[in-house]
Amino acid sequence: MAQNHIPTLDPSTLSLGWQTELIFARFDGLVQPRPDCLVIRTPGNPLFYWGNCLVLPRPPRDAELAHWLDRFEAEVGRHTRESGHVAIGFDATAPHEPLTAWQAAGFEIFGTAQLSLEAPAERPAPLPPGFRFAPLDLARPEQLEAAVAQQCASNDMGYEPAGYRRHRERQMQRYAAMQAAGLGHWFGIWSEAEGALVADCGLFRDGTTGLGRFQHVGTHPDWRRRGLCTALIDAVGRHGLQRLGLGTLVMCADPDDVAIGIYESLGYRRRGMHWGAQRRPARDQRA
Image (cartoon, rainbow, N blue to C red; front, top):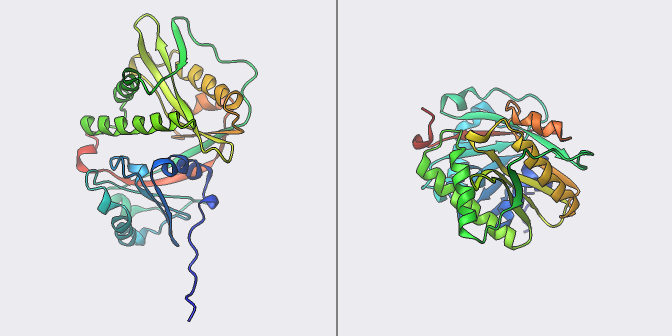
């Protein structure tokens, strides 16, 4: 007797933000479609919340908390004991039901704006005197470490420092491997007087769709409000469109953060939102 075919979730039906997240998971992780969700796992970095998560094509119901906790444990949580987080993402095309039971259970519910750019502004954003822009050579340990140190200094979300450093080291090792495979670059702005990396980010592609996705844009707290982020994003975007041959650049950002205004000033346009429900382990709880 023939078995009934149960269709799995098609990742191409997800929003632009989730689709471009898969650039990284497909490189060295696992992307496993299920009938009700997409399972994303990064075995090399169990501390990475959103590299070890479920993605749903629709918002969960408030009453479904126990169900999705069980599903997360079965698909992801049993593999990520080192972390202890829960991360469940979803798409929503309209206002969704408030997840009050989830919030009461310790979840942060947040939306992320998706922005895209197909052509750079007519004039490049100026880099202030005393700074230089350059790609990093992540095969050189001192340059990879400079990026990790800069990112840890910019840990604005209250993550436990030792665990966060391990997470960033593992992420940068992933990006180094992607850079070696020709899938993108890591970029930085350096203070010429101090020889210090003061801002950095990555831009990577999947090699098939013409999409490029920014990663971990950050400026050291001591060097903010000097136009460095604007110059960095503009220079990296031009590199991606003009030298990597990308057709569309994707940036995902907190819709309430001041940085989103920087991206929009450079021509990035909002392309809707995707959502996350995240529960941190006790060590990463904000004070």
